[in-house]
Length: 353
Image (tube, rainbow, N blue to C red; front, top):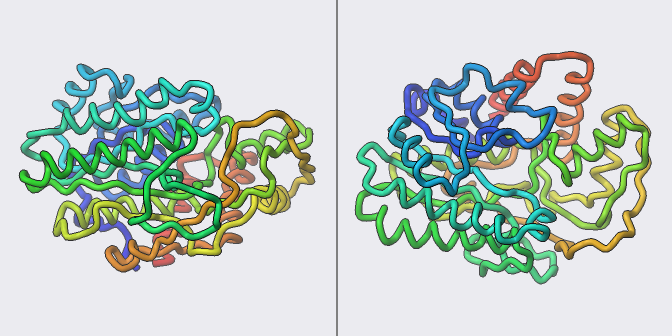
């Protein structure tokens, strides 16, 4: 399996939306390591601490702090960046926030994608665009079957529906506008991503960390729910390799899954117990018996198409994923620099190829 290629990325102009988020921060770091000229477009970081505030100095050629729905700011950012490659990660990324604020979730995830694609039309330097969605775009009846890219889209909750809508909009723009200009446009669907530096609300690993620090029991809404957990570097590697293929030969599928191998998932409770053990803390958990919005009980992706087309495959099994994540938080707690920790894990990950 190959790594993202330095000879492709070195000097290439990249527009990365959502760079201030958890996954966006890791992506910006890796692109910097590869020699890309990265411009960022995002909102201010939503959490404190924030991985971006810890690692972001010196990573970007240009930065625009604005809402993806601000079409003037978006056009100005694209004019400055003159991107050859666009990786769209800006999103409202939380299921529970989607229930609380469905209109803004739809506006950001669905219409924000449309605004970006519209702004990118007829850009002469553009080579490839990748829109990141989610594993939750599929119509899920909780059978436990591993979803493949040809399965029907769905979305019983506002967040999932907004991402499924983004998939449809991307496919429409690709067929209607970008295909005739030779620009590769695609979507990427990834499973539940964990790793060092995630401080978001309503996410399992940050919740475990906060519970351990405060010495209070961890509350789990759905301890028996299964998810395709994967380390953040797994899908980011896939995105970068996918963009290389879209830009160079374009003979790749219009969407790909990135996740652990089927049957590579674990329950929420199992992850909580394993992470607590790896962190060296005895964090008890208890069922949160409140009234919670519905979430799928079973969710798993089949990533074999990415393997066939890109040579991509997951490198970290469940134990290694949890170990790398816990190690990042534990070393950061001891005072190690976040940038150094991230670069160290990127180097270790590349060495596994």
